[in-house]
Length: 294
Image (cartoon, rainbow, N blue to C red; front, side, top):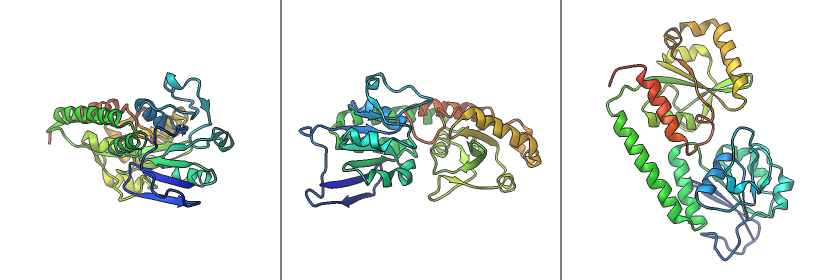
């Protein structure tokens, strides 16, 4: 029996061998009933669009899951699934976003199952994950149709944005009581890139960075975008207090000109989702308020 972990949507694939039966399984054969558990809303949505049945899905306090999974067992919140309940479902595969791999992989390693972490840090990563799942579960046609729709939508968006100004943007990801800077490696940063903005914080590998406001001021952003990892109402109160009580923010040109915006975290969250066209349109509207062309 092999315990296999796949970086789905990534070039890297690692195998953890607990015995030697078949060291290189390529697809999940139709002759073997697949019992799949999806532990995040974004992963559940992907499975739905690939027409995959599930035996376990995450709980969600903010999102409504597809109706086809109404009767499917809930296994807990994405960041902390109930592993005893997951094990009781006897899954053949557990699918999760790679943003939670560090926390969840040690738990999955204790189960006699295969598991994969989907690359949902970018729109392209999401579609590569869809391609990989299509091959794994023999849903190639569904995956092909989804990718074609993405290519059509994004080409149309690019055509509308040709020649538009590229503002310099600071993105803040709020947590209750604190915040981080979102780099180009984060999903929100990827949306900014796709929309034609310039992220003032670049990184080779880190999604989020700690930075003080003095360093942010030196980046001279044209726009400041704020979003929330969770509990958006509390995060907005936290941001408002920070911007009011910390004197340095009044020195930002973006603040002086009223170019500070709170984003909808259902569009601008931690993982890529199929609502990315709406997110891109939102950013395009904000950019257009800046005026001008390249």
